[in-house]
Each structure stands twice: as structure tokens, then as C-alpha cells.
Length: 137
Image (tube, rainbow, N blue to C red):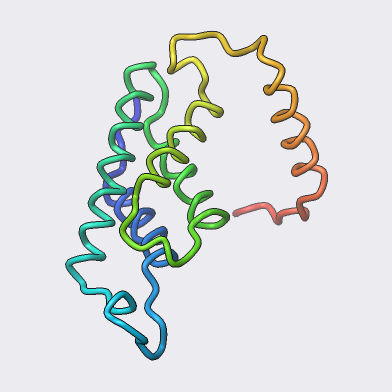
């Protein structure tokens, strides 16, 4: 069973924080100023949430590094500024993505839920519309 790559996890969480903790070029008020310790606290909170999801995956005999891909997805498509230090969105969104990717970690069988068909339709559409990727060497 693979072990969670904690260095990559930290980098992934930093990428999310980079998107959510931006500072305006000219602060207009105290809320526009972000300290290094605030940024570190947010990254630490993201990492803790991700470690919980990684643990759930490990317990279900799944690769805990799936969290890295899910975090990258969040950083790319959902980490919008200025979310600042509210990390609840991260924990909830990450858990949702992990459960969608590996529903067996819940212990329930969601295969008969009608929303699953909607998700499958959306994924099929996304795959049809994505540009062809060059093969990696």
C-alpha cells in the first residue's frame, strides 16, 4: 500500500492557499493585509484536512495520495480569492471529491442514487471536451 507523500501534500496545500490568500496591490484596510503566520495557519489547516481524507482512503485500502490529485483540482478550479482563512470550504469540498472518486470509503453503496448518473454525464462531457494531451516520456 502506498504511503502518503507529505511533501507533495504540503506543496498542493500551498498552491490552494496561494489562490485564496492573495493580497491586493494597495491595501485599502486591515483586512487586505495578510501575514506569513496567517498563511502558514491556513496551509496547516488544509494539510490536516487532507491527512484525514488520506487516512480514510488508507483504511479503505485505497492510495492515500489520491488527495493530491483532488487538491490540485481544487486549486485549479475552486480556490477563489479572497476566501482568506476560512478553510471549511476546503475540508468539505475535498471530502466530497474523495467520496465521489472512492465511494466505498463511506461504507455505503451509492450506486443506485440518481445523482450518480448526473455526475457520470458531466464527466463524460468533460472528457469529450478536453484537449488531447501529449504523451509523457
